[in-house]
Image (cartoon, rainbow, N blue to C red):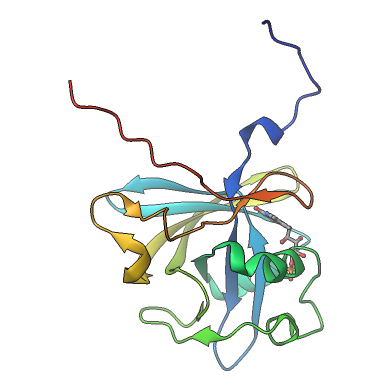
Amino acid sequence: MGFKEIEPSYKPLHPRPVYLIVSGRMGERLNVMAASWVMPVSEEPLRIAIAVERDAYTFDLIEEYGEFTVNVVDHRLIEKVWRAGTMSGRGRDKIREIGLELEDPLKTRVPGVREALAIIECKVWSHVDSGEVRLYVADVLSVRVKPEYYNERYGWDIRKANILMHLTGRAFTVPGKLLVVRRQ
Ligand SMILES: Cc1cc2nc3c(=O)[nH]c(=O)nc-3n(C[C@H](O)[C@H](O)[C@H](O)COP(=O)(O)O)c2cc1C
């Protein structure tokens, strides 16, 4: 079977995990949005990158406060992720409307999502503009996981942790199988 060229599209790069990004500052302004264009960048120092549309309210908050949390979520949060990703928090309290509980930060002034499986606190280090997006590269200041879903060997125990992944549009999936490469 051969290939068929299609209109250039990011879709063949999905599914990708979808995260909840909390931005702002406790006691001032806070917001949440969904983001699947998120990736690790370096281990020493540990940095990650997230792509944020400049029209998003999240963009304004990251510009103002320079911090955000990346919250790893599972299938149970699909409806909340969808709402976080389809309405803007500009001029409204999206976190309260969606009904997300917050968890106090350890190293920054932006909280995490209590229902998440992991909370990763980040501080912006640099950025690159591309089209409609600002790609933030950020230092990771703290990582917390729910240990019952996580082990040192493989990271997420995918028999328990149904990490939510985004295909496109309203379609999502979760990891299905653990495949471990045999030692030679
Ligand atoms: C599954 C999913 C993934 C998304 N991924 C991103 C992303 O990586 N970057 C981005 O800027 N917007 C992404 N969005 C869109 C934002 O979440 C959306 O524009 C949101 O309304 C922005 O909210 P805000 O204005 O309150 O910041 C995604 C939406 C969904 C539903």
